[in-house]
Length: 124
Image 1 (spheres, rainbow, N blue to C red):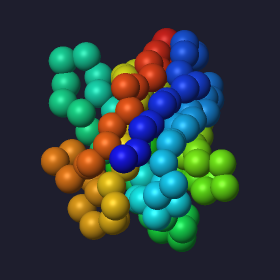
Image 2 (cartoon, rainbow, N blue to C red; image 1 turned 135 degrees about the vertical axis):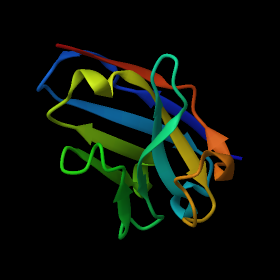
Image 3 (spheres, rainbow, N blue to C red; image 1 turned 120 degrees about the horizontal axis):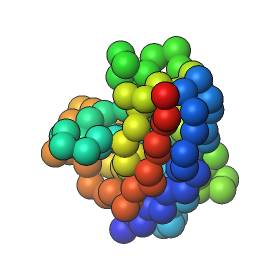
Image 4 (cartoon, helix red, strand yellow; image 1 turned 120 degrees about the vertical axis):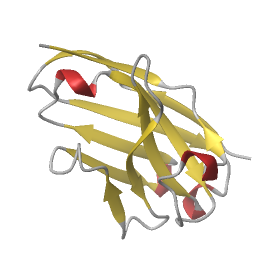
């Protein structure tokens, strides 16, 4: 069992930065692939970024490449999402996600565990 708690969301102006954190419980955290998804009002939840268990592999949605960076600290059971050059279209609830392996991690149906989300609001 893995429990996930996100933090770090808030209101920021366009062009600004935020760093999201996801605190995980469970001894198996270091073996899990982790990801961030987001859901804007009236839209479906979409993939943002993923990282494998060791941090040696990362993947990003095209819409955030070059602006967002995912990382993890296995010693402290935490995953981060550094978001730079934020745009109003980045406004959404951001969810942390976990699954035992990296395959097809961008697909919502494959995710085993979800956090409750943290709201990011980017003003123009």
